[in-house]
Length: 393
Image (cartoon, rainbow, N blue to C red; front, side, top):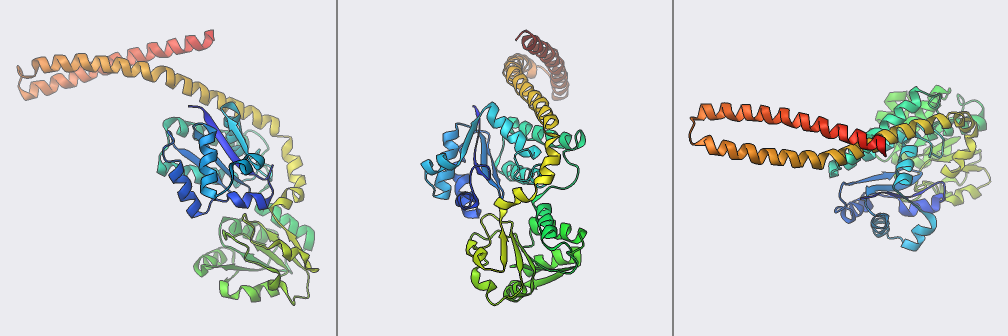
């Protein structure tokens, strides 16, 4: 069955389009239902910049499942999405895992997002071949960081947000910062802000315990969600990074504020109503602006791209060779094992009633060891046949 990848990402679609394909819990459950019969399982990637599906099946199956689950039209997906099959699909997954396809080139968060997707996929069941593929992607990512300069420095979305703040305010030690959301992006943002001199940071989260947990990690202040309005009025910099399905900040939140505010919306779907940007004292930046703000990091990492592509080709080639080997060896090994079992089982049955239980058990163990040694000889022979066929191809 051919390998396929379909998706919506920042390269082709703006935030307003990507939001329509965002997979919340209800949509994910629907998607799991519509893809439950796909052999080998499915990998679902859903981040602030992309929604992607990978599986060993026809891409039309994935498109149909995604559209049904998100209540979107197939023609609409064809207009804004992309479809890859076989080698192109493999290439795409390796590039995503390595950080070559990220909005911020080399984004350190993407591999964690792939790992989370893999963890969820494993619970639903993945084929051995799918497991091999993902492990190969992980190796390519690791090599890209150890064998090149691609991982030098930090170029995540959270880092880009901090760079924007530094460019805007110059000195972060004196400004009042409000983080809305205590998830992974909130943690990354807090870490980057503190390491760049921020001293006055507050965090608001719907679950106060999570806000307190984040606050204790970075010695910042935690507030209940009911205090959001008051904290917005105090802030100079507001960073939103929540999983809300609809905007949580609207123009009315900023009424009566007489000082300038920088608002960074790091969420998809967007946390901030675009109309907020119309206020004269607000600078609103969303995910589509992050790429432009981080050009310097991109330029530095571009030099490592040829080396990354070489690593990807090497890992992909090794994976494909492993798959070919398995597909060549396994049917032949199973056939020999089946024939050996028929022979040994028949001979054991023939003498079973002529021996006491202890002697028969010893005979079974000897037969098992002989069978194992014979299988090893055949596996080695078949492996040599495979290598010869590959060299002659």
